[in-house]
Length: 97
Image (tube, rainbow, N blue to C red):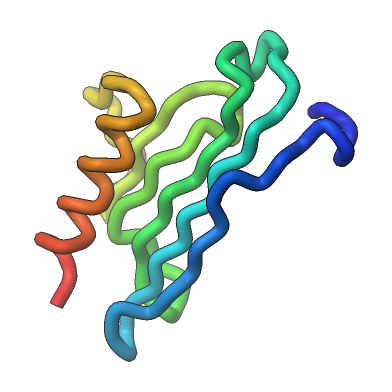
């Protein structure tokens, strides 16, 4: 991981759409590396207040992943950053109360 001064926070949002769910969107510009070749580290999380995941997109391990309440989505193919953000916002709207 890059030193802290090489990390720039691009987005850091956290809110509760209702009393039972939480959305956390965190996108960081990081130093280009083998793990993050595009210089972007992200986590788009929608879950319950109790800590259960409903849907989450991230590349925390250097691999683009989609997690659901059933676990890791093995069929997921990363379509690009803009598309992931749009899909996440659509899914949280559709999956929400």
